[in-house]
Figure 1: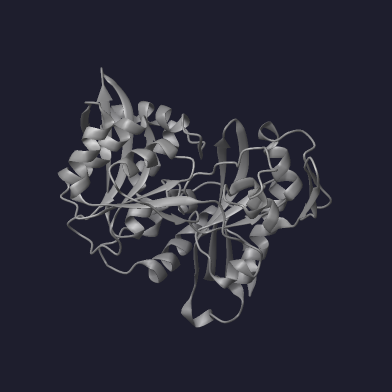
Figure 2 (figure 1 turned 30 degrees about the vertical axis):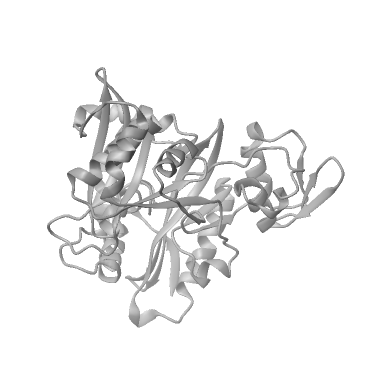
Length: 369
């Protein structure tokens, strides 16, 4: 058995293996269509296990940059992890994960986001992270939500000429993936997360005075696939008031019996608008798990957001020393991720931590893999 980084001309085998494992209905688009960051030709960072010239296990590994309040994080995401049923039980996925972690270390990445939380990942040190709120909206909230915003906007389906304005609104978010217009164009067409849950992706925009002030990407039932989940907000950006109107319009226009709206903890204004009409959230963690590639590298990349010298790292995986006014905390990887990204971290309970938690995007957005 040979494990190696995938070459561009080998990716079609990865598509075929992924399709065989993941597609549950013949109408579902191929994984090669849904996940261009993994399967499109180019420099691949993904790994495969080979039995001679046959691909028998695959792990998609994709580089991204996240901007968060002026800092930039170099990260990788893991997805489309699959093994041929005839080759399971040989620890192939575990070996692929080890290669990906080494690749991340060599690349200067700080974090790996993983679209899963099974023991394969947690045994290697991946952890739950961050916080989010999940709302479930029914048609009864449409009119109250419209009234609560105090605005009137023109809501319509996205048109191709809206691309740059949507990109601009995405760039204004507190935390989000750095995405060029060309990349955004491909991701909007790919509909990755919507295809995974067998829904149809719809992109609606709010327009005021000829300019877009908000957008919402929503997965709703279509005519070809049997949904595996309820209608879901995939991504949003722009004015919270205008976005709330887009969400209300989507519920009405697509005759949705329920719309799930997950929001990362930092989306406080939109969350407050939804709560103002009597909808209480479920408090959850961010989606999937996160692996800390290098503590010192993470702290270096987050330096614009942290008081200088506040957290010292004694090694790639700690321990980390956080100096407070009356004590010094010693943290391991889990503690560092908690105090940095979790606004409800137990280390913040007594109010002695004075720097703000660092926001991350919700992980099932357009860049989901």
